[in-house]
Amino acid sequence: MKKRPIIFITVTALFMASCSIKDQQNMPSNDTILYSDTIQYHPVRISRSDGSILPWFSADRGKSYDTVLMLVWNFWKNMETDSNGLKYYMNHQVWKQEHDMRGLGGDQINMALSSWGLLYAYTGYSEIVENMRYISDTYLERSLSSPDDRWPFLPYPYNTDIHSGKYDGDMRNGKGITQPDKAGSFGFELVNLYRMTGERKYLDAAVRIAQILAEHIQPGNAEKSPLPFRVNAETGEAGLLFRNDFSGKAVESALYTSNWTGTMRLFEAMQELEKDEKEVYEKAFNVFYEWMKNYPLKTNKWGPFFEDIPGWSDTQTNAISFAMFILDHRDMFPSWKQDVKGIIDWTYRELGNHEYEKYKVTVMNEQTVYRVPGNRHSSRQASVELMYTELSGDTTFVSNAVRTLNWATYTVAADGRNRYIRDDIWLTDGYGDYIRHYIRAMAAMPELAPAAENHILRSTSVISFAYYSETAVAYRTFDERSSEVLRTTRKPKSVMADGKKLNKTEVMTDNSWTWDALPEGGILKISKSSGTEVVIEL
Image 1 (cartoon, helix red, strand yellow):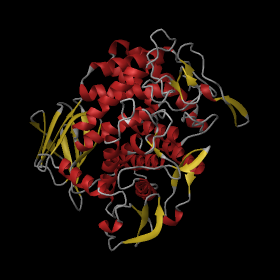
Image 2: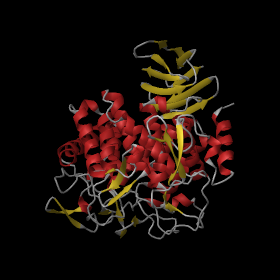
Image 3: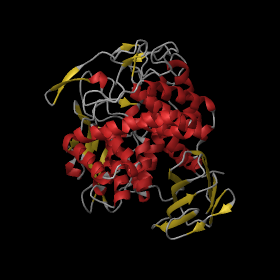
Image 4: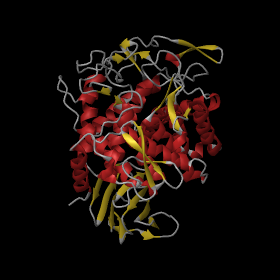
């Protein structure tokens, strides 16, 4: 019998009993002071030793992070069915009890799929994969542009008639307008869902998206990205143009965005999965690679991203997502340390939020036209800073990164509602683009994962099956060659890949595993060059 479902039911029962659980159920430790001040839903906990912010649930970071992740997932899973028979999150970008009357957020579907893939590996809950299927099947059935359009088979990001059950345009520019950057991100998530499930329909849809995007790529320049931000799918003309001053020069914001990391990952995956067209996708990838290096990375022109902004706005999302891309492709960026640190420095300089400095933490504002601290933006920042630390050895950002993760837990209520500071309960910010950053942060710094449980925190391959019990962890990877990072409750007795025992080593080599003990449990790292079925005996 799996261990975590028992834990999950217990935690859920505890929290769903009331929306206003008192913090004394998680009494402050000797090192904790409970402030009368509140952030969002909870009184602030600070460390008695240094005055820095702690998570709201308890001083135990791993327990606290795990708790908010499971609360958020449970709220999403149990969200009501809307009047048109679809789940609420398939119609609206904001959750309200009386139902908000805005359609989807532009990247809402893609972000949810991204987070749920990581959460499945972390928990082994099959219901998460079923939710991914539901989201993808529903969106594919109802969102694609016509086969006869100039830009066919691309998903529209918005439902202009909220309860029509049809996605047919752009939130601001109306029917017929799509966003190629969001299409590319969706295509990449479909590739991963194919890798998880083996269902060819997801790969076929991703291939169509990749083909159309590749066909329309141009070299790009300082004012135009290789693909436009908005385009009329039927006619091929750029969407309505909004001009705004940038360094004294007018910019057509419909023609430019720097949100291309998902699209680049899609083209990268296509080179592996569609080998007959490898040259096409390699060329498409390289156009974006060169453009991102020569323009946004040099100019810090990191906009736009958000579908509801009428003019120019630089965003933390685009900047830090590309920093993560660089960390994942260090061989392509000889100056990767300087590049990533430069992006991080830009975010603090331009979007750092100092409202919470009395708790010794600087968090992140969303974008230059909406300088409000964001739960997802701050947790994204923290996760990438910890990735940078893991790979570079530079510990400059560690303390603030952990405190930022602590801060972002306060936006999660005891029933799983996740509210943006001074705003609404956004289904992007609080759900799809929230969970993944905590799991990535735990992977970069496994000491942050819960000590009393077993979790897959990271794999270089997609995890297509995961199983947890008190005495074993088993999982399947899409690729034969992969490496994983886990937090386990004790040192493994054995680790096997496709029935062959892997060697315990002090330094990682092919087909081996390492173990680093922590005060409770430890960090298990596995590297294999063959085999997809891994069994860990504990």
